[in-house]
Amino acid sequence: MDIIKAFVLGIVEGVTEWLPISSTGHLIIVESFWGLNQSAAFKAMFDVVIQLGAILSVLVIYFHKLNPFSRTKSKKEVQHTWQLWAKVLIACIPAAVIGLPLNDWLDANFNKFVPVAIMLIIYGVAFIVVERYWVPAHEFSVTRVGQISYKMALIIGGFQVLSLIPGTSRSGATIVGALLLGISRAAGAEFSFFLGIPVMIGASGLKIVKYFTSGNSIGFYQILILLIAFVVAFIVSMFTIRWLIDYVKKHDFTFFGKYRIALGLILIMIAIIIVVTGGSL
Image (cartoon, rainbow, N blue to C red):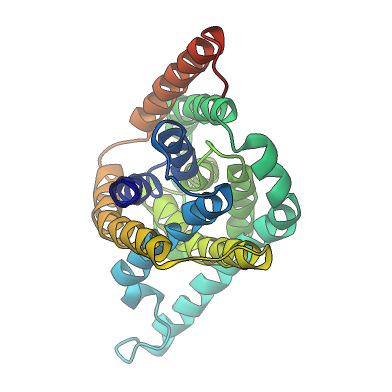
């Protein structure tokens, strides 16, 4: 059953990592009802490591754009590529400074059913408010990723810190920040993809180190589970990223806001039923 569950969780990760609906939140929800039959330590490591599969899809899709060593690029294009990486790294500073010290505390206190539901609703409302009231009153001054300034990148990185709370969504928080800065939906979404590369690689590496330094081991079956979820997340992400970029060229993020609110309310209702019937969350 764990092999089937890994396949399903890989699909969930591949879809929700890039849509502004919280991949961590959805993984917590699925695992609350149909989780892996593994230790808590392994499942915590699993949730982060399979994100590497999703991140790999970004490197594949945008390989040329992100590759500063491409022989087909002009000197100016190479310079712009290095500048893009510099902006991505600058945007990672807030998460590294604030996120690392609070990582364990946030996992212990917010990696739960109800906090996820609350954050889904809060950011769902934020998307609707920004799209209906802020965006119409402000023109997009930035329509391409290359136009994002270093200051904008740092501010977007500040918004990314908010996503440390499960249910928020890393892409959701950074896209909201980008919209408030006058960055177009497509450019904001694309920058959030790139920003996820060092963040997820760093988070996965940290989880792996903590897993093994805490005295845990891993067997062939567990490696197989990780590999299945990793590959599935990669394949699904390839389609999801392309779909999202096409979608935001013609639509806004209001639908995702409504989805978040609806899902959050359903989860709160389920939580109330569980508590009333004597269960535990």
